[in-house]
Each structure stands twice: as C-alpha cells, then as structure tokens.
Image (cartoon, rainbow, N blue to C red; front, side, top):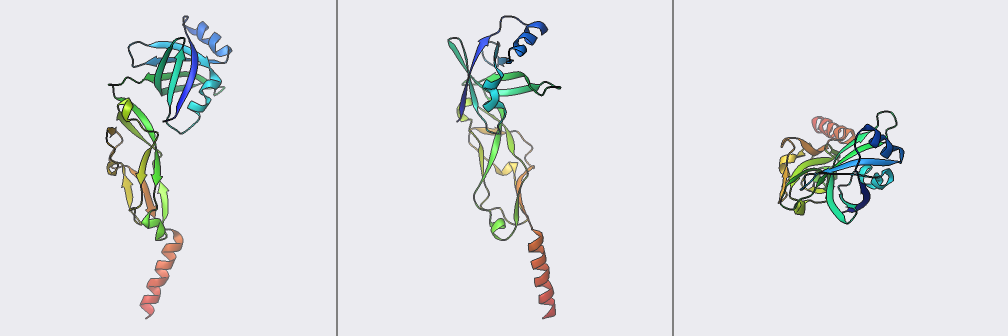
Length: 196
C-alpha cells in the first residue's frame, strides 16, 4: 500500500482572516476527523500533489509535531476561480473502525470474448467500499478471463474477504462488445451459408 508523508503545522487561529493568511502562504487548511479528536492543521500545497492528482488509492501519514496520524483522503475543495486546492478533509484510520473509501478497479487477465474478436469496454473505474483499515487494498483486481462476447461482469460478481462493496450490485464493471468487423464477418458467413 502506497503511503505519502505530509508534514504540517497545527492551526491555532480560525476564521476567514486566518484561513486567508494560510492560503496566502501557499498552504492548504486541513482537518482530520474520525479519531479520538478533530485535528486542524495546514501544510504546503505542493505536499498534496502526489496524493490529490492521482487515481491511486493511498494512505496519508500526517506528521504534526511529535504526533503522526494515518489517514485517508475524504473530501477536497478547490477555489472556483483559481482552481487551487482550498481545503482538505482527512479521515483518521482507527484499527477497529470500518472506513468508507473509493478503491480503483484493475482489470486482470485475457477475456475469451476479446480473443474471439470482441472489444473490452471498461464501464466503472472504481468501487465504493467499507472496510477495516487492515483490510484496505491499493486496488480491486477483477479477473476478466471468463468474460465472453456480449457479456458483463457486474459489481455483484466481485467478492473480496473483509471488504463490503456499497455500489449497486447490478452495475456493470466491464463488458465485451462485438466489433463492427466481427459483425460484418458474421453477416458475410450467414450470406455464404444461405447461398449454398
């Protein structure tokens, strides 16, 4: 599991003026909740680059003085005008407390439908899940070996021990569709069969 370390400073002043001051120093105001206490801090905007601008699921280790908090990204706010990062909410990982996160999907294997000339279509990039911190994974691997032509793999087909998927079970994750070339070949074969 990828972990990114972020070093920040605890915030002592709040309100619009204090927040403006933090942003003028190219820092982002943040909050960590979900643990024993709610922690307000700020950190340089560039420290969040590899955490925010990626599709990967990562854990953030936030160092504030002598204390370190293991967290996951919960919510981001961007400035509507400048599009700069304006605020971040983190959820502290507590060992015996399930956390709701979004994990990226990784399709693995070679679909029999693709081998038969079909085209793989990815319909879902990530799954919403609930799990204890110890059960969290970097991504959810979905095996597509048995995915046939004109078939789907749905959310309900994915089972992972210790992880509860909260998306609607009938949503397709991936499907194999017939390509135009394959349709033409089949139509030609049908015409040839009728001629004989």
